[in-house]
Length: 417
Image (cartoon, rainbow, N blue to C red; front, side, top):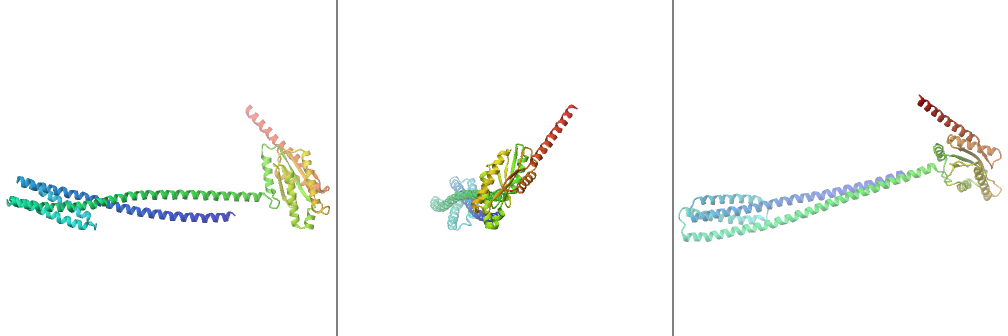
């Protein structure tokens, strides 16, 4: 039974471990994919941020170049030429950063091509105007024409920058949305993993508790089988000896009694009616013993057709005689019920009783057995009291009292010294 239970629980544990392994692989796979997606989204977010920052630097550099160009045309101060050149240099550097940031994005390629052309034309127009002014070849009519072309190139450039900024702002917004979604999905995955872990712990605890309970139940059944007679359901000899030892060793013990019984005529029942009928007789005798005994008494089948009633308290001889007489009468009535007077049944009972301080379980059982054989030899179907058990109990009690007295004397001598 325990082996089958252990094998079943082993299979259940393997199933649980398989479930845990599959769940862990699934969770780790989901988390791995989410981490990869998070990494890609974070990378896209950084690229979008770099693009937007570079675009702003391009606009800022171009604005400085335009400011230097206009102020030079108005004042002819060469310091504004340096501002113009620095603005152009800043624009080119920022545009290089912008090109690097968008080089891996396919959708940005046409926008960058338009933006590059518009930027080159606008800067070239600004530079041409500054050169003409330095050479004093720029009159009012030519300045007006250059201004018209410059404004057209500038508008084309700003339009291209605007389209690029709109695209990357939308992409940055999508990346932010993706990051938020990944964050929520990661949290949901972690919550699911925690729930899976909690479920696993609950299932494991339940399986362990069930396993322990089955082991306890099996152990209880084994103990009951070890302590119980299989045929009659009464206690067996081992249980009797343990109960006797506990009662004798107990400080609260006031004495006890044993009624050792042997069924007279039982062999004739087996011979005449068969062993099945004999087994049924033994079960009926066991029922008689249960009815006659007190709830605190122990009814025992010690083997064959021999039974014992153990009374774990001090009992008078009159009380024991009453029980023995009732048992003899009921077993005799059972014999008449089974076969009339053809196969009479009876009980030979040996009674051993003692006061507090009994000797040992084996001694008391031996004394009751000896008394039972005396009852058989003197006619059967009767009871006989054993005197040796009382004598042994008195000797044992005297020994204990003597030891206590000697201990007391030793203690008095020690104090007086």
